[in-house]
Image (tube, rainbow, N blue to C red; front, top):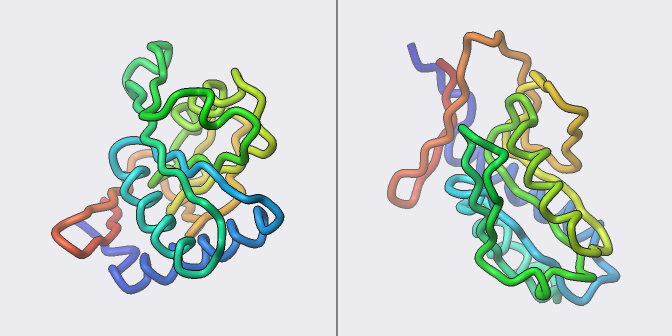
Length: 164
């Protein structure tokens, strides 16, 4: 049984609000790195970047973060060189925060170089953390049972989130 928890319109609204929050946080910066965790986190980062380019003068650099979610001890890789995010503000973006494992190991990767700020954002925070991970910007907080699963679906030019 799939229950729609966010429609396309609601997701677009939440992403726009997150973009404004990011801009408020980085208003004194010249540029930021939006690092989206592949696959859905990167798609959300692209949407945030589009809005930031409309509402701000920030130079937004997109970065795709690759991590093996089944084995987080493998090397985390990024689509841009570490030198490009060294001494910059970074926003790490993912779709759903479940246990915090993926976000924790991706944060660790970015802390291997000096960054000026490191913020996290997710569309859905499920409140089932194994690690002390807090998101700075989130679309919604959702208390679910550990048996339930939240999925964000991107189809053509629309997206939605459901709980099953």
